[in-house]
Length: 289
Length: 277
Ligand SMILES: Nc1ncnc2c1ncn2[C@@H]1O[C@H](COP(=O)(O)OP(=O)(O)OP(=O)(O)O)[C@@H](O)[C@H]1O
Ligand SMILES: [Mg+2]
Image (cartoon, rainbow over the protein chains, first blue to last red):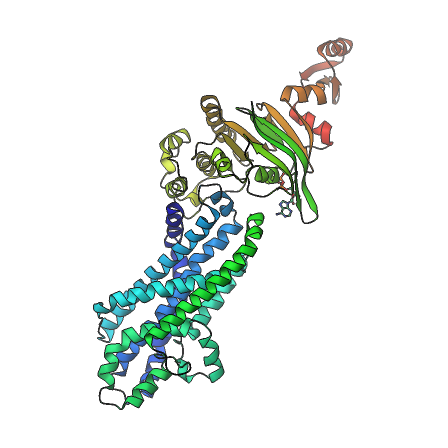
């Protein structure tokens, strides 16, 4: 199995344009933010001191979620490509079992998701450190790493579910475009969740994306929130957190731990779906090779 | 000694029968050719024998094992008709990654030497020429030192030198390690060296035997007479005596003649009524 994970990792990291496109969603959110989103939001939160220093980590949090979604999808698409190009037939001649082959794709995808999230974190953190003089707090790293692993795992499973239905490489391109674009909305980056219509908000809450972003934002923004809001009434802070998607409203306000439990819950439910589907489609997949 | 036996092997796709109840017996150490035109069902047969697809019907027996057995997979090597290695990776990465997918220790250096991979070892697989790719494909198939090697049209699109080079290596492996080789082809020349030939058309075996026997059974010798004035003429003759007779009768009117035994091409023509290429 090591051999296959190694090969899959090489396939991803050797493909420069593939990496570029898998980061497209993240880059769009970053550029939109620099171009006008930050200006808009700073002016609407004018009463909060140092709004810019609050919004920089806010953006990083959302972009990390987008990165987790799109890079794991890009890595997992190798599975569909291998199936179509009969590479799977060749792999099945080796000593790796069918389950082993599937697991290799999952492990690769989780690794790539974590690595790319961390890379994005360092790039954005460094950028804002230089340009806005934001703090780049390395003591947060263990928690960031933890969330990166959880979200990478979560989105690998999620994308696996979606790809179970994809048989053609052709369809794959379309799906990545859709997911790449949608991820920015669902992660609450293109627009803060609180300014969207209620129906839209409700739909978003049926996906793991906003909880994932909320977890990141809780960690990344924590110290600056304390600083910026220390002289303002608590209700302003609550309002800010609600509108900006730092704490999600679901029968009350969710805590960091609850966000995490919801994501784990999603992962469990989706895993069960994937297992059910794969036991049905396994014969199909094998016989089509 | 019998190595592999397939009994009434059949594959249906939707409502189309690609392989129709064929029987094969492969002896250890033999070089066996499956010859047939495009769409005959050669690849489908190979895919069933290698366990890549499941037969609709029929049995495969390899030393008492069936094709979805793990040990079975360990004893075979397959060169697919279309390449299955990664264009984006170097030859080295391709081969070494595959080698790590086997549990038993593998010997790569001898393969590098045999197939002359040294000079292209660091090159991207996608940038290789057709012949170089084929050499890498075959090296990949031999990583697990198989007893039985399947090659699906290994030499399509290769020039004579490359083909010969590949054949020399395979012959060497056959003699030194007793490797058994099953190959599909539509190059008739390639079957000339085979120990046994199956001719497949439209999913059925229409003839099988050694090359000599096939030529004896399905062809006559061909005598070509070149007249002093006009067209050459082909006459099929059963033996040399008949040829000498014809020649002496025509000795005054011909400028030259040619005499050749029937080839696999004639066998194929006579069996199917069509040229293979
Ligand atoms: N997956 C499939 N679904 C439907 N039909 C198929 C499938 N695979 C092969 N066939 C059909 O089965 C027949 C035999 O195909 P096969 O690939 O075995 O031919 P072949 O002898 O290898 O030909 P070639 O020399 O062109 O490689 C063809 O008519 C082909 O269209
Ligand atoms: Mg074929």
